[in-house]
Image (tube, rainbow, N blue to C red; front, side, top):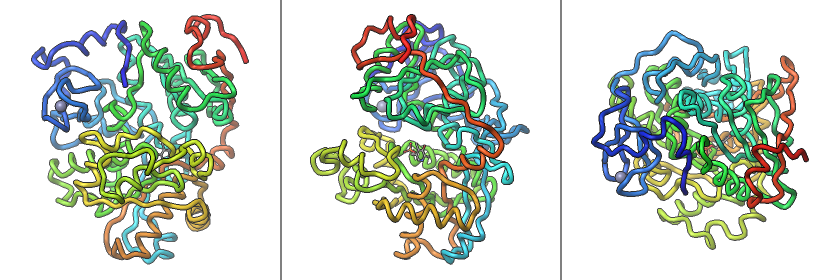
Length: 442
Ligand SMILES: *Cc1c(COP(=O)(O)O)cnc(C)c1O
Ligand SMILES: [Zn+2]
C-alpha cells in the first residue's frame, strides 16, 4: 500500500533520514522488525515491511487531569492535549460475571453510556483512533482521506466536526445508512458516495487516489501509530483501574489493529513497572464464515492463503452477522502484527457463528442493561467459549473489550443527524476533479 500527502507542510519530515534532528522529543518510532529508530513521523520502515511502534520518552505514565482519553497524553503521539470527554471506561462486572462464574471480570465499554461515564457518541472504539489521528494532522493543514463503511467513518466525521480538520470519507452505497452524527454535520466533512456496484474495496481504491493529491493525507490504517496508541488506551484505562495488567484480553477483530494495540500497550505497562509482570493473553475472535485470521492461526501459519482461509470472500462476508469484521487485508503476517501479537502472548483465536454471537449479545444486554453492537456480541461469545473450555480460571483477571454500543441509549439523549453525501462517484476511476470541486449530488 502507498500513502500520499506529499504536499502538506509537515510531511517534509517524512523524507528526512533516521539521522536527522529529532523533531519530536516526546517519542521516537522503532521498527518492530529490524529495530531501526526514526525521529520523524512516517508510516514505513526503510528496511522492511514491519510495523513501526512508538517509544515514549516517559517510561512511566502520569495521567493528565482531563476527562476522556486525553488523560493518557504521555503515551499518545500528539503534542496538543486531547480535551474531549470521549474515552474508554472500565468497570468491574457483576451480573454477567456471576452468570459465567467469573470473579474478576472487567469490562471496557467503548460507546455511549453516561450512567457509567462513557461518552463516545459515535458509539465505537474507532473514536479512540480518530482523536489522536486528527489531532496529529491539525497543525499540518492537510485534509484526511479514508475509506470506511461504518464506525470508522462516523468516528472520523465526528472528530472532524469537533476540530474543523477536513476529512474526505469514501463510503460504499451500502454503508450510507450508518452515516449519522450526534451533532449537526459541518462542511469539514466531505462524504463521497460510491455507485451501486461498488464495494468496500472500490472505496479503498478511490481513497488511495484521492490521498495522492496535494494537501491530502491517507489515514494509514494499522500502520498509523496514532490509531494504534489511541486504541491502546483501552488497556491503559483497564490497568489503571485494576492496578495491574489483566491475565486475559478478549476482543472481536476484523483487522486486528485493536489486538495489536492492546499488546503494545501492555508491553509499555510492563516496562512501566507498576502494573505487575503479566503480559495479557490475547483472545481474538472472528465471525464465521469469514474468518481468515482464525483459519490461518489454527493452521499454524503466518500467511493467510486466500483459497483456504477465505474462498469466495464476497459470499462469506454477505453471510456474516457482524459484517464490519470483514477486512480482506488484515495486518496479520507483517512484523509486529496480529500473528506476532498472538505468538508473543500465547494467544488464542476463536471462530464464532452468527447464532453464538446473537445469543451472547442478548445475554450481555440482558445482564448489563446496555445495548451493544454485533462485534461486541462476538467478543462475549468468545469469552463464553473460553469459560466452557476452561481457558480461563474463575479468579483470573479478565478484560472484555466491548468495542461498540450504546446507540439506543444515545437516541434517548440525542437525535442523530444524517450526513448527506457531498459528491457521488460512479466507480473508483472517475476524474478526481469532479469529486472534489463539483459536488455532483446523488
Ligand atoms: C472496527 C471494530 C472492531 C474490530 O476492530 P479491529 O481491532 O480493528 O479489528 C470491533 N468492533 C467494533 C465495534 C468495531 O467498530
Ligand atoms: Zn524495519
